[in-house]
Image (cartoon, rainbow, N blue to C red; front, side):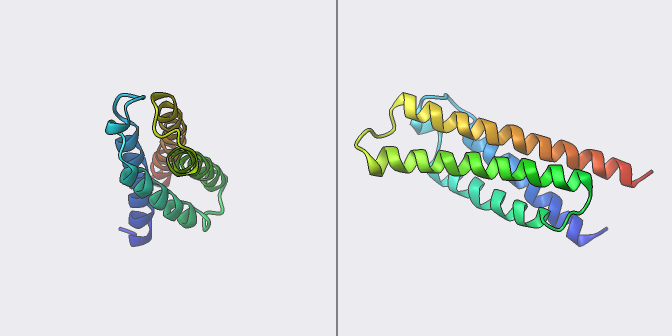
Length: 127
């Protein structure tokens, strides 16, 4: 067992599960989406992105690209949340919450691509 690969896989899976935890729930109900879960998803996604910088294969490049997409969408969701709550007096209306959760859903899709590619790469290693 390679400890580096365990840590790499751990952060990729944790990024996916945290993002899923934030995403799940009624899309326009702010009580179903905790800001701390979004924050944790952003931090873990950024760590997973940094870990992907060492990959030199073609799959590694796609892994990095999918992680950058997830980071960008999660950061956009956090910025939207911050602007809605602190920048304007709009607050978390159902429309704003739906936009935040939709951005998180895009990041979730990018995380699913990462996990799928990781599984494909792992199965190729055993051949």
